[in-house]
Length: 329
Image (cartoon, rainbow, N blue to C red):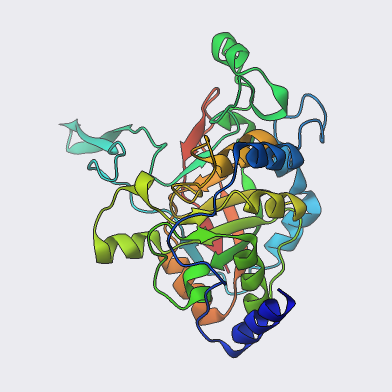
């Protein structure tokens, strides 16, 4: 194993396209139900910031971390990481409904308004998952009762707990660039070894309070291959990445699809990374981002960190929000 790792590191340093040993895109490594439960228990943040905490890992974004993130802005260049809203039904997800309403003209003065309607959770619209989006065995993050929140309308763990926004350093992990491809194929799983290899290649180590953004090249794949059955075969994080995210004290994680590799390889659990990140760690998730422009800019600058700003809708009781993540260099 030591020899393999050393050779792997050498390939990174020379800039050659690499692939981890035994890791062709044939599917995620199998994990038993017992192993999944062990991983979930080991990454729990329940009680870490108090029994009434509703912010989870966003507690890691301290005033000091925000000031450090602000200092990354040198060029003053901002780039959106949201995909344009999709107004047709694709990839098994609901369309964004937009009705343009023209106001009556009076005295030569007119105007226009809009009505928006969207079910943003899914595989198309860029959105932020709040901590009440996922629950497991009747519990949400920090042990809150899902049934109690649903019946009481208390708004616990809702997106409104993030109404002050997210302002922190983001690390873009460009996995296609790491592997020397345009996009990840089929059911390619991303493992902790990939994340650490990217740190070595980019010269950036993930630290407490960071947002980790994982580029799989999803939108490029769709452009070139057309639509596919996402649940049947999509690249993403393997459940083994949960311990890595917990050890690094990541505050937020995101990807250009639904974060998890699909199928997950985990016995009995379809989206174990979502489950571990949201329920156990209390970490919001950015889903369905479009990293093409920011990846191009980062490659041009050879800079893989930037200021990330997010301002979700202030909806009491909301399970998330459509979002426009902004990267600023």
